[in-house]
Length: 391
Image 1: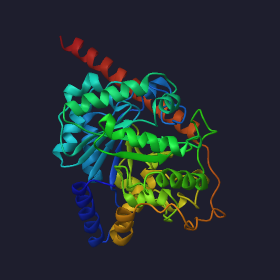
Image 2: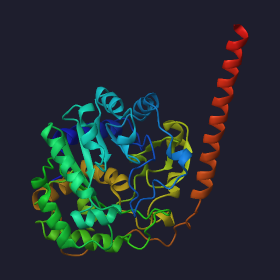
Image 3: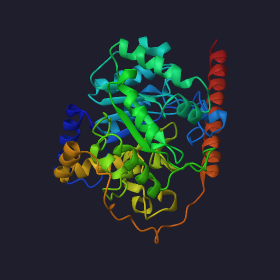
């Protein structure tokens, strides 16, 4: 139950080193998003609502390696969009592995079988396949029939080639605890050997479906009900910290650690985190030093009020496990507590109101793409004219 031993040990050693160096803020996971384009349009997704000129952008291999080196996090999660739409993904994965990183590629698996031969299995490499429950649940979530069956088939193909495969499952307020528990029971039978990552959906302001996002109280009730059906969660394998699972069930009060999982996209380093798009920094150093971190998080910003997603709170849980090892040991031995009082919630009375600036961000980014295309066209024309003059 939790992060694999080797990965956990390496991350733990990394955290201890940061503390010894006196660093207050440091990354644990680089969220590398080399494209926004996807081949699905899920109802709860707010990552793909961009014009085609933006969706057609790709982060080059060289920029991906620069981001990995600049960030220095021990784990690299490659997301999107759909990463398998990026033609250089195999090279990006190999480059990250060569840098001794733990690498996870998040995919809806529609292209996984077709491209499996371009990758090599490694103990440090994991496919994280998007499955939001059983066939009916998942196909409803991704707004397309047949996707669950194709994903399950791709999982079998990946396992046959020796890959580690986990699943990532996002839950909304219409999730049935019994049904989710039954789904988790099926994972080993599906061939999943890397465990599950579970989390509540984040209320993206541009997501098509705004009615089914969970608030924090309902999130805790839902996960308690799920874990209650699985011996406090001990019945299942998870690809995440057991202390984070304890947090989902209301047994921990954590503040968000938005710098723990910094996001590098086609436009730069996204402020303040993978979920919120409120501007970009050109370098990781600029992101860390110029972002007003205290302006974000539960209790600080209205958009963060209901968030309990792993990219913000898993780093908080991991660091808590290092400084409070008994909580990690207790959860590993006895499972997640599903009865009794929950820990107090962070007050929201002083949070600043939400700023809805996505449209302005898109316009700014689109203008940048158009200007870059104009410059490239002009440079090509000038080079052509120079070549003709030299003849």
